[in-house]
Image (cartoon, rainbow, N blue to C red):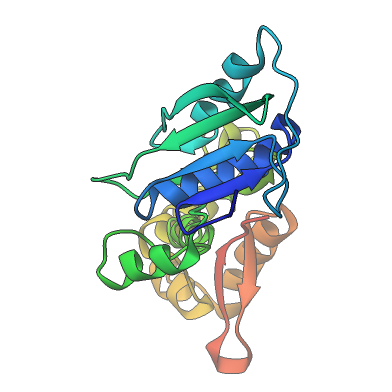
Length: 229
């Protein structure tokens, strides 16, 4: 046997991650067949097929593709040896992802250029930018091996939390101002409460000590925003 554009060989079901990636690649192109129990050179090795082998392989493919791919899986006798054959159809409507990404990067780039999908790898940056823009704590990202887990945290600046800090009315209004305008300067605090620069800086110093806000910029361009970490 020879590997062709639409035919690939795998030695055993133990190479299931590579098998799933090949399924994804075939689904994103013109479809194809995977023969398990055959070496890269085309030598028929055969493979052990137990009671749950086909079911386990099917589950690994289905559970690690999005949208889920349900290929036809069958067993064949080739040179009197057991071989598993996976027949993958072309995905007509959607780009198939595996382990959270498209296995065929050229196909993914083409879809990005026509605005069919987001560019791979930019999603997490956009989430961080949105949370920063909204004054919320930056989310955490955890890769479990098969999935990307995003841990989102709401703002800790709830009325209940603020009530425990013993804030003055002016300090509470500064927080509300930043919620609306995303930032505040010492000059804006002075105008807001008709106070001196020293008094304005005293308000902001307390909020910094409580890790509610942090300083940004230099010199005349200094301003204050919510601390995201």
